[in-house]
Image 1 (cartoon, rainbow, N blue to C red):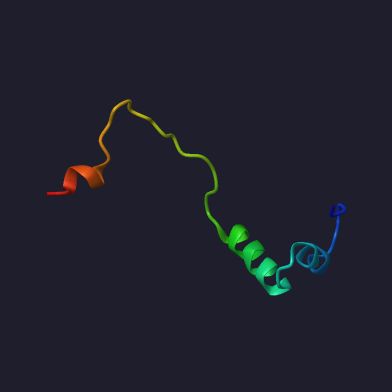
Image 2 (cartoon, one colour; image 1 turned 30 degrees about the horizontal axis):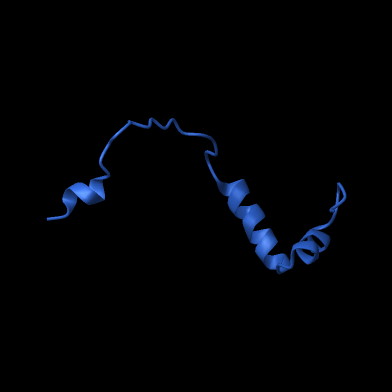
Length: 55
């Protein structure tokens, strides 16, 4: 269990990843312009495009 306010080194050690990987992930998330959800509509009985394209 990681305590609140743990350092990046503690977190990376706990999960067995390199500290630089954790830093990179943090940078990637911070740089993301839009994070959120998208609307998805599921149609019953639809044929996937890959199946339609096969000869």
